[in-house]
Length: 439
Image (cartoon, rainbow, N blue to C red; front, side):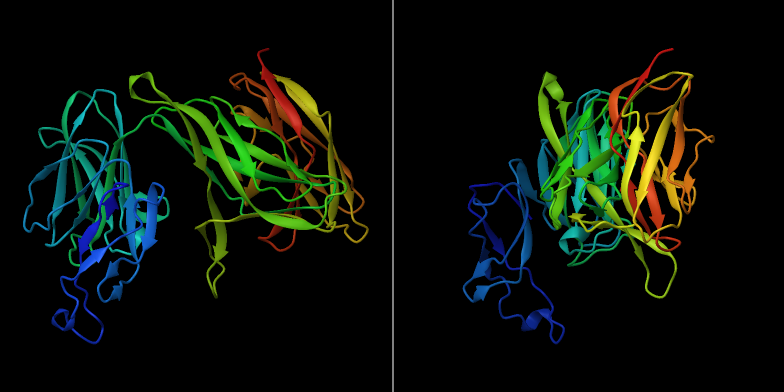
């Protein structure tokens, strides 16, 4: 359910069917419940136990919002169209098989709108699909699964002024007590998301680590995004980096001071930018990173990815590679040209096996993380494998005539030590300030 702050909040008891009984055995049917802590919660989703005369209920999810919140009637058959004045939220339940719930809103030409369903993330069963229709019933846009969820999300740009309908339905046409959903509908605009594979990192005192960020631009957004990392371990610093216009990736480079103590912390990665909104308004937006972790299914060699809420960064005792140094630390690359990076590694006395060098996070030919500007690549002339007593290599970067211009973008050489065929320890060089200029 959705509520507005400072509103008196009461709700009818929802009849449940215990495993050993039926609805008729529920002695609390139609008992009044009261949420007493709505006003004290910040906007967003919360969980609480409403109070009844017989005591607290089971935990329920509720949403606090500054927008108008509506409870849709439990209509059967083919329900009518419910008008919505955006921004708004509405809670509904599919009570008959094959139902679609229709909501009408007024759109403005070239205006952006964002629609999002919450159901399975709140313990309910709707596998939602959203569809935007014009005044003649023509389908203009469809949204299905969101980020690692069956809850639908849809970004829509109105082609003209006028009424539009947003239709919500279950993918399989199911209905019943568990087929409850909340739909948020609000004007939007250019936006972005931060993604990455960085769920842990290690660096020794005096050493460095690197994570790779992927930027997803939404609704025509092409502005810069400043990356931030909060909660660093003691003795660890982060090289400031901003993803410029025209780029969708960067690296996060961490450095441990020579006297950094052995310690670890959970860090928080965010991106910040200014976003335009209707009427010329600008908002200062901070977006938290969506991070995935690679997992292996029990008894199988097949890997899959799942979202993870924590990112661990640790200062450890020295490992196989104690330092990676690159010269020069600042380079200017002309379009159509090449430049060389001289790489030197320092090994522990116990390690003499291979060290693999790269400018991207690559696994069996697939790039899971990048940092170079579009049009800049690592040349095939590069030496990328150091074995035995080999300590030095040369990385060659080349820029195509169409490479985008950047000014002092921090990058680093990635050094990887294989532990198994699929597990590697990553190390990073000192930051290199890369500029790409016209010929």
